[in-house]
Length: 182
Image: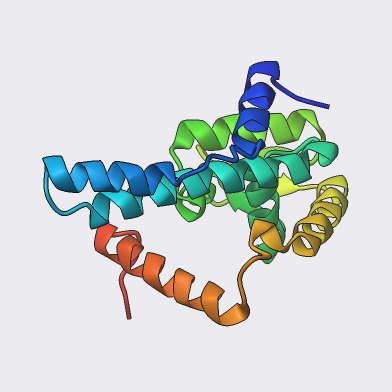
């Protein structure tokens, strides 16, 4: 079942193999080099953006039978990682590195599915906690099993390559100020 028809058409288009007789990013890099100069950064960024499209489409396709998107799945996992199965909405946004509006939207959708419930924060009279329900825990575990079986869409890489990729991208995240490198 697709939750938004336009989004599903987009995902299907992204997931569909292009089978081009050439690498369009490499071709763009050649043209870039001739017109503007060094193309390494442009080619790397363009590749990362394309890989993001591919992975989101793949992961959302794996999660669609569970009526989840990757964003909603991440919220369920985060809540399940917390000691009490609940977190303030503010912390959810901070930990998932998304805007408060996105957190509200995600939690609202999960609440409609009875996977999460909101409750007043007893430590902050103005704040709200999101708490994962047992149904949310059960669904998150089934979804996790599917994602793990598919190796999160990264089955073409070995353990060392995945570690190297993480390390490379981690440096960019540190430079952007996501966290302090220790």
